[in-house]
Image (cartoon, rainbow, N blue to C red; front, top):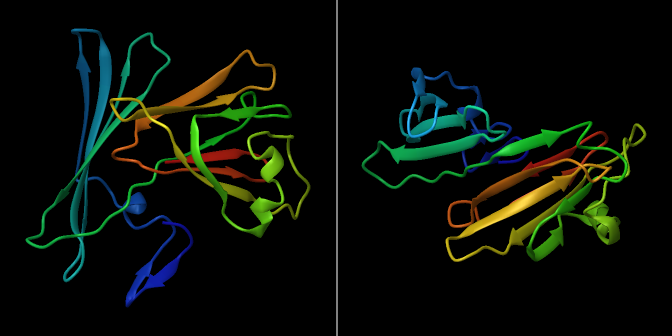
Length: 191
């Protein structure tokens, strides 16, 4: 994850390889009960000789009439030896949710600025002041969130007027860390 780099002898691109691999199987399905919903399923293999042998089964579903999208992903190791992997869900927001006065709200257990640049904004790390001038360097904050008895947590981006927002809920068992980035024009949230 992160910027392109070398990991030993392996060259890693931005956010890994699977983001640009084509799906080998795609299916769109409608379920009428118990509640009507649309489901998109895809299978993507990240395999190479003497390298990873992983299969991602991705499922995106939405119940008709509800403002909610659910992602259910599973990774299968197709190799006879242990494989390492990381999962990143990255979401960018813009107007009308993001603007001067937008606020990030979450049950923070631990918070740390990624670097000196982020440390400069630690007093207002969860507030957005609107678009920045060219040359603005992003500020990124790393965190762990508190969870409930079912290992679930939630984070919210509240709109400037406080009348709207978007929330992300997920399992801290599968996704233990959360990253918040403030860039020139948007907030990025990643788990």
